[in-house]
Length: 177
Image (cartoon, rainbow, N blue to C red):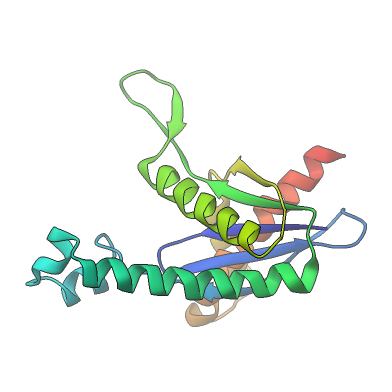
């Protein structure tokens, strides 16, 4: 079994493969409450605060606390499905200067997050390799898929991240065959 995570600033989408390794199944997302300076609601909340700009100890401790809560929620899924591998989507962008596809700055943050998650897993005596794969266009495809089901806007917003993770994992499984 393989589990996939689609990391976002608001939600982390999750999908797992079936026992045969042929199909990906979307699961319920996890809310990401780690404070972000790029998230409008968090930026507004801390707009007049020097805590964000100075990255003070209280902000760092809040971020660590929220990250730990998030890791524990992700650990729940690891315990439920016992995956042999974790797949993580990495956004790539076209560099207009060189014409080459490169990882975005968001990709670096995602790698840092999952490196910390891997250390967390190891501290719990869980060894599960993490593989990073290109997630280009998965969110757009997921949005179109959900819109085609005539789901409500709220339902679409709540499920787009896990549908993205499902698409990401299904593409990965298809390449294995």
